[in-house]
Image (cartoon, rainbow, N blue to C red):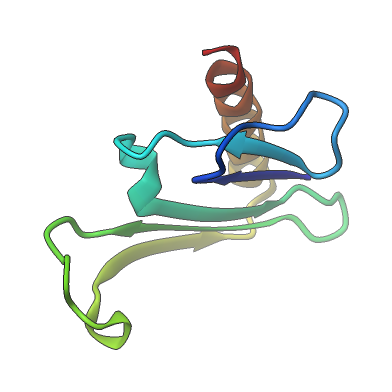
Length: 91
């Protein structure tokens, strides 16, 4: 399991869950995603918060959301998350 968020620092490679620090100025901080690459029930949900909503109450914020249970799409999302975790933890 990997968790991407605004942590103070990323955990070591052997940690469970692996925590990956996303810098405060990274565009990824406006996104959220959940990827379950299980062979018996693959699923993903990905959302992006529209910029410029500072000061808007949570119930009024707007997001664009995508979800899928298509195995190749979920597999691609899992690969992207792995590549992102590697890239961010190296920097």
